[in-house]
Length: 222
Image (cartoon, rainbow, N blue to C red; front, side, top):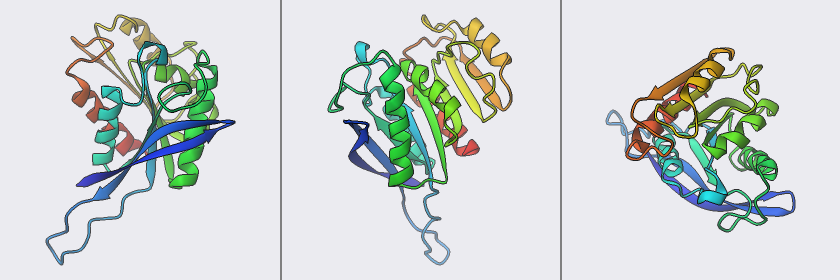
């Protein structure tokens, strides 16, 4: 079992400072036999990217926070952060262009701060639009997950051979699940797509279920 030590952080992105919260799992309890501590926290980490800033998206989004908590319970370090111009993060919204640099900065911060053996990258909605292109270019990203994902252009991940997980609602009003299925079919292994009946883009009441699936994916693939 793991608890969590949450640390508020500020990290650089070029001339800007970005706001984040670092979730570092802490083993809880002791083994009954010999009262030995639980195994050390594995040095594996995940960056999670939030929904669209212009529509209220931030690192306190319920899905983002639930995913971070689920990852922590699995023993994975997690960084959730605000894109430029959101919360205490400096700068202004940059049409998804500067936000890609924010993702790279978050990965670099983790690499220096906790020196993880492996890094995963995940996003929700708009978060996937900026996370996916970065994953393609970043050798440090070893696994990729998208909630209500946008794969744009459709060929973006055609040469991405690392583990990929996508989950979308069948009633999603922004992501066409049939088109998403066609795109994922064309992608190289390893990959997994789940379409959840009755769920829409906002996953009301489904956050825990989705977060558990994302946490299981990163636990198994990092």
